[in-house]
Length: 185
Image 1 (spheres, rainbow, N blue to C red):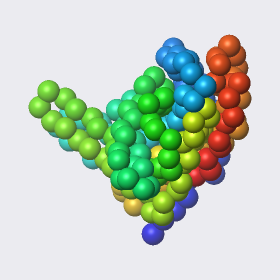
Image 2 (image 1 turned 90 degrees about the vertical axis):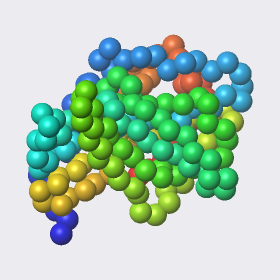
Image 3 (image 1 turned 120 degrees about the vertical axis):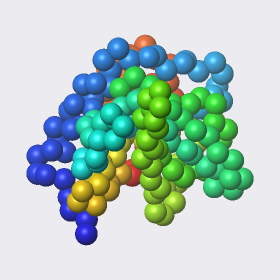
Image 4 (image 1 turned 180 degrees about the horizontal axis):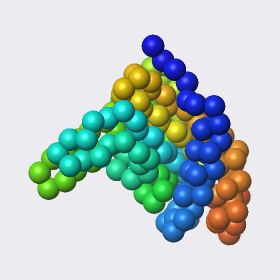
């Protein structure tokens, strides 16, 4: 059985995600030509109900060590994007086409142990990557509660809210002069 998040936790998580998103954030590379495209978003994993094993604590909020695998809907070619500071991910190297998120994973490693938490999306959400445009996924919350068997993957901030935050943080970026494609999850 799936249960929702506790009332009031979604706005708090969204505020926290945005605050952390830009703290010490890396700059997204600027476009070099008119056909350069950008796929961008942010993700946070909130994990609950996981047992501590081998001195590894899975419960909590995670922004790093998350990988999203994007697959081309026609060719099947895959591109892995790993999170950077505060869960930010982007690529300006993915060729034009229609993509979907094939899988997402969080990996926590120590010298002697490795733990992987992963998921897939049911249904194929189309992510259009077009020449000269920005494909914006917004800020995503991946919620995983092992004890109560609740698993969610959804937007904590809409693409429009996320773009506004990016514009405030990086007002001089040439990407703001491009057309933005907002993807609703």
